[in-house]
Image (cartoon, rainbow, N blue to C red):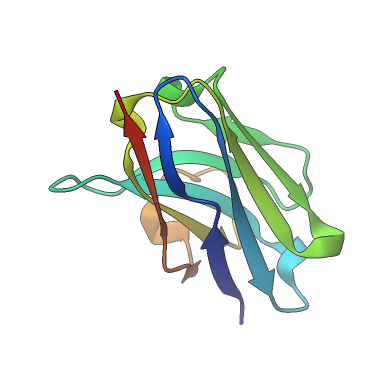
Length: 124
């Protein structure tokens, strides 16, 4: 069982930065890959980034490559999403999720546990 809690969202101007944190409980956290997803109003939840359990692999959706960086600290049971050069189209509720697998990290159905989400709003 893994419980996830996101934090770090807020209101920022375009071009600014935020760092989201996904804090996990559970002794097996290091064996899970962690993904970040986002959902804007009236839109489907979409994949943003993911990091494998071994910290050896990362993946990003094209629209955030070069701007967002995902990292993890297994000793602290925490995953971070550093978001730079934010754009109004990044506005959404951001969720972290945990999966036993890797290779289909963009597939929502592969994730077993989800956090409650944190709101990110980017003003123009």
